[in-house]
Image (cartoon, rainbow, N blue to C red; front, side, top):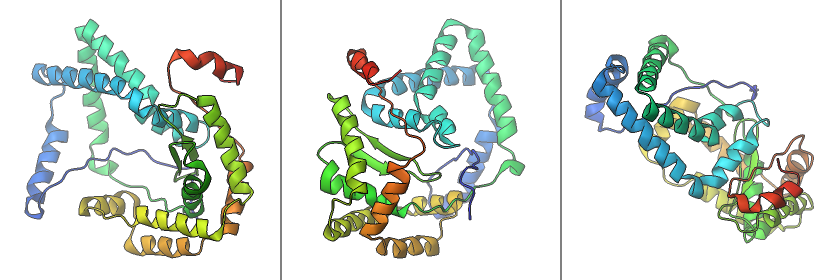
Length: 288
C-alpha cells in the first residue's frame, strides 16, 4: 500500500536530443546549473527580463486558464500536496511573479536580492545527494471512467471539463468563459446525483471505457515514456495491469465510487476566477 498523504517536491528538468548527443547535453546541463553566476550584471539583466516577461505572460493567461486556476485553488485543503501545486501553478504564483516584477522595476536592490536567492537555491538544490524520485501508483480507474461517462451521457452539454486527479483523489469539474456560473454550479451538483442514481446504461459504460482507452493509449513520444518511468516509476507491466483493470469496470463500480467519493465526500470546494460583475450573485450563494 501507499501513503497518499505523503509527497516530495522536485524540480524536473527536461531536454530533448539525439542519442549520440546525450553526453554533450548532460554536460551542458551540468554547466548550466553548477556554474551559472546568478549575481553578475549580465545575468542579473537576463533575470530581470525573464521575470518581467514571465509575469506579463502569466497575467495574460488568466482569461484562458481561469478554470484551471480555480481548480488549483479549490483543491487547497482537500489534499496534502494541493497547496504546493497551487503555489507553483495557481493564482499564488501569478501574484508572486507580479510582486517580484514590481519590486525589481522599482528598486535595483531587489534584483540583486533575487539573484542572491537564486544562487542560494542552486547551491541547495543542484547537488548529487539531493537527486531522487517519488513513486505513487494509486489507481483512479473508476473515477476516470465516471468522468468520461458524465461527459458523454449527461453533462457534456452543460460544462466544458470534468476530470479525476491522481494522488489523494481530487475530482474536479470546471468550465471556462462561462456566462452562467451559478447555473453551472447547479449542474455540477446534478452530475453527482446522475452518477449516484445510475442513470446510464451498460452501453454508456462501454462507450466511456472506449473513450478512456483512447486517451491512455494515445501515441507517446519516447521522451514522454522515459519521463513517466523516471519520475513516477511507471513500467510497461504497471500500465498493462491498469488496462486490464479498466476492462473489469462495471456500472455497479461506477455507482459505488460515485456514492463513496462524490456524494459522501468529506469536503468539497468551489472557486470562481472572473470579473467583478457577477460577484454579488456569488456572495448570495455563500462565496467569500
